[in-house]
Structures are given as C-alpha cells and as structure tokens.
Length: 362
Length: 259
Picture 1 (tube, rainbow over the protein chains, first blue to last red):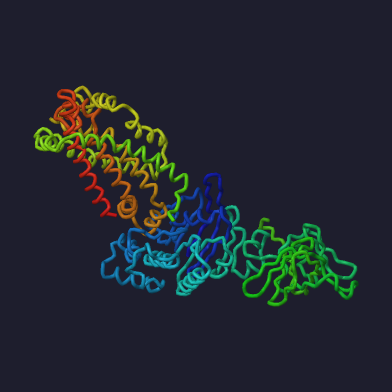
Picture 2: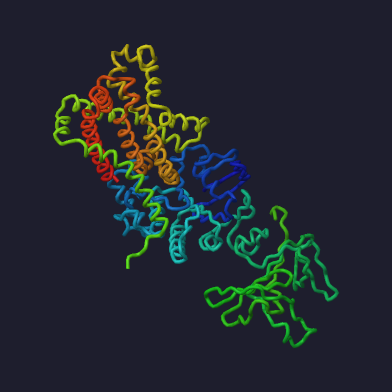
C-alpha cells in the first residue's frame, strides 16, 4: 500500500498540501486536476525527485520519504516521450534490469515477458525512432514493469495521442490493473480518469478536495469545481434558503436568483442545500410559441444558445433560462437552432439536490 | 519555366556570397601564389615537419587533458544551479575576449618559475615555460571555452526527463551520465573537441609568450615572415592549412561514424 500522510511542499510560490492519500494494492487510483494543481509535484515527491517540507510517504509499510530515488520501488512514467533514443526497444526495456545486474539468461526472459504483457513483443528488435506514439507508450510501460514496482506512477500518459490510441492504451492499463498492478495516475481529463479508475481524487490548488470511487464522485460532486472536472454539465450552486410554496412544492433558488421547483426533495433536517444537479438526458425542450396550454405546467422559458453534435447522432443543446442548462437529445430529436425560444422541463427523477459538505471548499 | 527566386533568398544569397568570398579569397590567393616546388620544399623541411607534429600533438594533448575537467564543468553549468553561476559563465568566455598576447602574459605569471604552478612543476622536474607543457597550457587557456560551451549546449539539449527516468529505473547519477547524458550529448561534445583542438593548434599569441621554442607552426610562420619575408612564410602556411584541413576532415568523418 502506498500512503501519503500530511505531505506539504512549497515550490516557487506554489503550495502543495497538506495532503493525505492511500493507494491500496490493486487500486487504480486517479488524481484528477487541472494544470497547475500540483499533480506532477505530488508524483515527483513519491518518486523521490522532490523532497517534501513535511509529511511522510510509506510504501508497503516502509517509510520511503528520504529513500534514494533508485531504491524506492515505484515505477514512474514522466509525461511525454521518455524512451532512450540511442537504445533499441529491447535495450530500453532491459535498461533498469541491467543496472540491477540481472543475470543475462533471466534478463532476456524478463524483457520478453513484459513485452508480451504490454503488446510490445513484436517491437523488441526495432529502433525507437520509428515507433508510433502508442507503441512508445507500450515500450515505456514494459520498461517500468520490468522492474516489478510495487506501484506505478503515470503522469498524463495519454497526452498527444489520438482517440483510437487512447482507447488502446486505456484498455491495456485496465488489463494490467486487473492482473494485480497498482497504479497512481494523474490527469486533467475526466474521460481518461473515469475509464480506468477504481478510485478518484480531485485536486484543486495543491489540495485534494474530494476522493472516492468514480461513482461516488460523479453522483455526489462536492463543489462546482469537482463537478466541472468530472464532466458534469448541469450543476448549480444554490442559495441556502429552501422555500415550501403554497402549492406544497419545495422551491430552491440558484445563486443567480432563479427559483426552481424540486418535486420530492428530501434533505436531512438541518442540512443546507448546496447544489442542484439536473440530468441532461431527461430534459425536454418544447417550442414556446405553439404551447397549447399557457396555464399548464409548461416548464421554464429559455432560449437555445448552442448546439453541438456528439458524433453518435445525439446533440448537446445549451439553453439559457437564467442559468445555462445542457440538454442531451437523442438522434432525430434535435429540431432547434440558436435563437429558438423554448420551454425546458424535466421529471422529478432528473433533479438532485446535494447537501453542502462543510469539509469541502467551493 | 524556371521558378523565380523570392527577393529575400536572392538578397541573402548575394550578401552571404560576399561573406563566403571574404573567407575563401585569402586562402585561395595564398595557395595559388605558391608554386608546387616551393610547397614541396616546405613539406620536406625538417623544421616545418617538426613544428607541425609538435602543434598537432600538443593541441591534442591539451584538448584531452583539459577535457577531463571541462566536460564535467559543462555538465554542472547545464544541470545545476549554484551561486555565482553567471560569473563562472562569464569567466569561461573571458579567453575569447582578451587579446591572446595578454592571455600569454597572464599565463606566464603562474607558469614561470616565480609563479605558483611553475615553482611546483620546477620542483617536480617539469619545465613549463619554453616546453611542450607550457605550449599545451597556452593552447588550452585560449581554446577551452569552445569545448565547455559546446558541451554545455549539448547537455542542456538532453531532456532532463530521460535522466529522471534512468534514475527511476535504478541508475546511479554516474551511471545516468555515462549511459544516457553523454551518449545523447556526444555530438556536441565531439564538436567542442574538434573546435578546441583546431583553435589550440593554430594558437599563436599566447603560445609565443609562453614558449617561442620548441617552435609550433604558427610561430614558425611568423618567424619566417619576420626573418625572410612573405615568399618564405607562405609555403609553410599553405602546408599547415592543408594539414589542418585533412585533420578536420578525418575528425568529422570519425565523429559522423559515431552518430
């Protein structure tokens, strides 16, 4: 188990921490944060390239905070291309084993074994120069895995790859994780994070603001920042007052002042509402000018501001109704153009009000 | 239809041509004005041969001996931050800026028998001033910046992430230097060696201050020019330029093969 406790570091005006983290054996732990949130600095401290000002890093019960880089038993894939260009693929994978003075007969077997596991076997006798981005990453993974690290640190491993290659490498990472490998992976991309993670932590300004399983984080983001980072579109901070209307329905107000009816809202007594989450797949848009019953439950008036095709026939339609909501419309359901005036409505099950957590900033 | 060259290419070709002509014309003039019998006489002259051999081996020895310290210094400058780094960089470039005769005088203050190094060498039975060791010191003093600066550029160009990766894979810092950094910066280090060797071999100002004899070829050319005039100095210069050319072509070919 990799455990980080009370870690703190000040570097060129940036402050990381205080930071606590636990990566259990077999975990695929993803640190999700924007550029400059301190993800790489944390990995560099775990790998030993930076020394913390305070705190401890332990790996399998051993305190490695002050251990030499070479003796830490963590693999580290820096961001970008890190293959040694003057060595062949085989020599690259064997590099660490040779430094360990591994006997020649074992070295050959080990190189071929990890190359097979990472899909790089057919590349062994190639030069590094001619490899594609995906092939390079496979070789880099094989080279790190050859050392049999207790935990493998990955810094934005899919940067610069096209969609197809990303899928390919993500599949490989998932497979390696299922075979028992432990990963600590940092990225700014929620697609990447949610595709592989068994646990996710959200980093903001050098601190971890939320962690849990991907489902926990996606279903219950603790701040606007966390929600945006995991790709949630319709997430709005609420003012603290909940109003029970004369009609018996519960009304909440967004911080921008829009009052919304929330059917079936049940917050624990004393909890203050923090955020409103709308499921974009369940939103309905209707034209305003042809609505048959002006007195009926017509929804909220708004105007279409943007339409984005999603590639699979679905559309992402942004509507300004005082707040910007994003509706996901199925193939053939999008008859709108920017400027169209619409009513937006949703069923009760599309709405979720999250309680504000005192521990979570934002 | 012949494509028309764009105006900037045309202007730069003309300006570049003038610069190139300025470099080639004197050398070409010198070669064309020397007759083959004159050059032959110079080639078979024992004093000329001796001076060329001396210039070559002292320059080579100066390059390799000082390289032992220069290459690590270049690595330090490329990879480490330390107080006074800018001052150190400026000091390294100093020999490029001061007159080489002044460099010779400066060297004499430590290499002569009254200087610190000269006294130590004298006690050890080594003659610095007026000996090959002094020539090497003079050559190294004026040409070291070429090796240090070129190597430094080469080390800076090596991606630090590769070094980090090597350390993460269990390599010690020394092992990282010899298995990753140096193999990747090799081209720049060799370029520096070639430049330093060439600059050292042709050094005149500092060498003549430290050692008139044994005589190196640049000093011999000067001596013949002063004593007998252009007609006697020119063939020696032609032979020396020819030797320099051959040596550099060989060094470049060797360096290219290593890439």
